[in-house]
Each structure stands twice: as C-alpha cells, then as structure tokens.
Length: 265
Image (cartoon, rainbow, N blue to C red; front, side):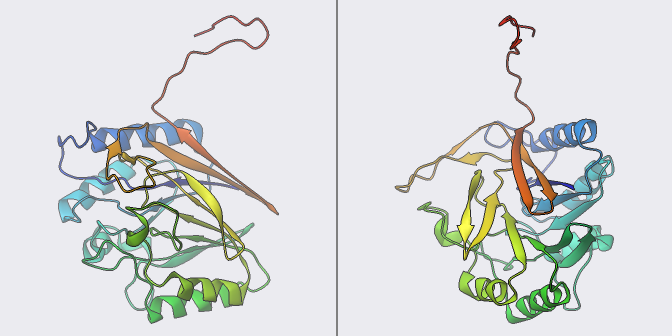
C-alpha cells in the first residue's frame, strides 16, 4: 500500500511570495508530480498548515488546486488553520461527533487514524479529553489490527530549541493511550519543516518538511529559515514493513549511466 504525505502547504494570497517562493505554484507543481508518478497511491494525507492565514479564500483556492489531484485525499488542520473554514470548504473530509477534524480510514494493511491537534489561537497543539477519548475508541475497535497515526504537531521533543516548545501540549497523555492500546505501528506528522525520524514510547515516527521554507538545523536557538527544496513523502506499508521516502520534487540533478560512467542528461 502506498500513502503520500504532504505537509505545511501554508497557502496564502495568490501572487504572494514568501521566503522567495510562490506557494500556489509550489502546490500545483507538487500535485502535478504526484499525478505523474503516484496515481496508484491509496490516499494522499495533508498533515496540517494547509493555509497560512486560515481565511475562507485560501481554502477555496486549496479546493480548486486539489480538484486536480488524481489520488483521494484527507486533510488535517495545523496551527495556521481555522477549523470552521476548513470544514466549510471540505465538508466531505470528515469530522467526529464533537466537530473535530478527525476520522479513520480502513485499508487491507490496517487502520489509518487522523487526529485534529489544532488549539485555536495557539501555535502549540492540543489533544483534549474528547479527542483522546475518540482516539481510544478507534484504536479499541481496531484491536488486533495495526493502526497508523497522522497529526500535525509532534508528540515529543526533537532537540530543536525554537520548535520544541511549540509541539503538542502534554504529549504523555497521547502516548499513554497509544501504549495502553498497543496497536499503533507508526506516527506521521509535520509542523517542524524538517525531515526527522526516530521512536517515541517504542513507536517509530517521521516528520515531513513539506512545501514551505525549512527551519535550519540549529540546536542553539537561531530562528532562521532556508529555502531548501520542497518535498513530500512516499509511505509504503506492506505487512510488517514500513518504508518512508522523502521526495524533493522540484530538484533536477545531472544523470549518469552506471554502466558507462557517461552523463546522459
């Protein structure tokens, strides 16, 4: 099974250039690349910060852009989003009984679970009692089957001085649920604008840097971004195997023949 993860689109006003990039153009190029190479994917998951300002106009632009995507998609909110405007623009995307943008998606390889970690008005993330109870119930339903978790905010410190205080608040509450149920095989998130992988509470995780500018890898606290190549992730799940590959879709490198050593492009 192939899943595509795109994160931190930060779609704003048309024609706006931020940190040297037009994010409308960047999203269009990303969609073209996915359509050309991964139209066989089961799902494309957008893990938050879909827009930069949460305005209705930005979600309308996003809806137009995603209408060209050849793969079904699921959208999650990040701290830059506004839940009401997201739901209004994408009512088919799914909400739970409390109006949070949370849902589950069944696949032959297990259950994909999508969490809403938006804390309206704050940069940090939140999973309140209602959201955690919903998650607990969905994992209980999938007992004996693997589950894969998607959200925007990281549920752990990553050793990034600027970003660690801006992650999920009280992450241990989430980890307690995951540990008790024991069937979450992998956690996928965004928010930190870097490719990072590791484990937390014995569960593997990966962060995707996404479409916006990248925070430099500075562990001492300089708040600077660099216009590194944007990327999306290709997630392959097959039984006990999970492989995550980050794809820099705008870069073009010289190509060489391994047989002759000659440049072919």
